[in-house]
View 1: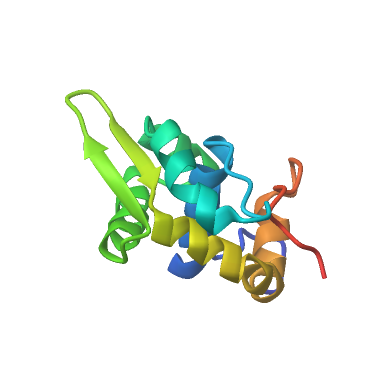
View 2: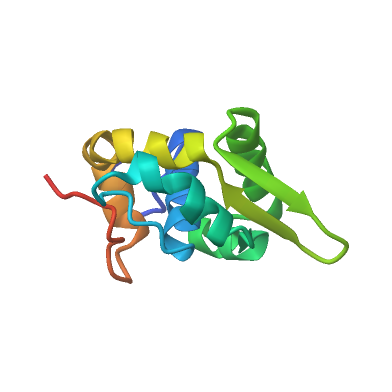
Amino acid sequence: MAGTGKMYKGLEVYCCLALNRVASQLGIDLNQADLEAKLDGILKERASGVPKVDISYELRANHHMTNHVLSVLEEDGLVEIERGEREYRVRITRKGALHLRKYNMFYSSIFKRYIVDHYKYSQLPSWFVPG
């Protein structure tokens, strides 16, 4: 995108950012050895999830876009959403964690300019693999 305006990020980029935020905030090391064998225990131990508002902040998106992103992730089985009276809590699923483990390098390369732009005023996330 030319100019100095805000760079448009598509739904796929927002889904990548949101899913990685949930994994990161729950302290899941996607690169650890034998993740597949340990994952069920890790997910059970960290079952509290992440507040939806934290994902909105990560995306820097409005309520509508955050809901749309979470809906797509939930439909794809990558997250589960617990809808409480006062807040929504988002938990990554086994499928979601393994998805990130498999595709984060791909996301880092294909969405590089969007991710770098998104985090230009803060530190790049630990899952981002510059290339």
